[in-house]
Amino acid sequence: MATATSTVTNRDGEGKNPFMSAGETDLKNKIVNAGATGMEKAKDAATSVAHAVSDAGSAVGDKANEATTAVGGGMKSLASSIRQHSPREGVLGSASSSVADSLESGGRYLQEEGLRGMGADVTALIQRNPIPSLLVGIGIGFLLAKVTTRS
Image (tube, rainbow, N blue to C red; front, top):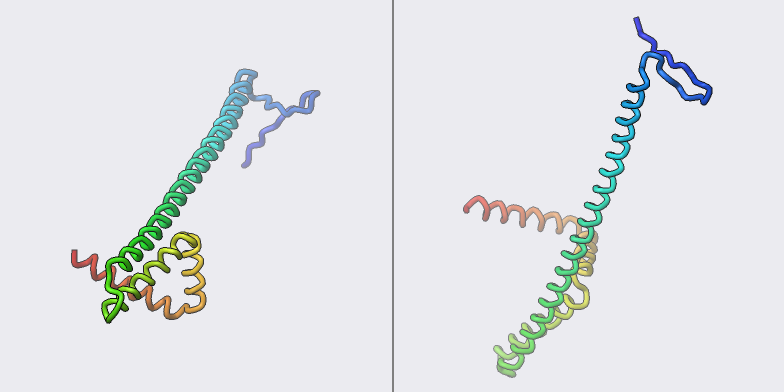
């Protein structure tokens, strides 16, 4: 058998439980208000944490881009150093020139594109070649598993 709770409506149209005293009603209202205030504070705290995490992520991304640019500059500097200190002719000269050219173009790419450009290029490469990319991923995973199980 179900029990029914009845409410009495006063002239303002508000429902009132005839079995609750005025003190109990006040206590109930205080609890409801405290819960609402707690929810708002929790939402504000969550928003603050989300902004802090976003700002930290931006700072990490900026530092990574700066590091990438610095590595690119270092590669270009190394290419220049190789060109200055290597022979100009012969097999060693052509090999060092080829290495210097590769370092210079790689450094320029890192400086111009940064991490976002590299990510976009890798994504495009995987989309153009899905099967070879999958096989390379499996191979890298296999090698990582071999290296970590030996240790």
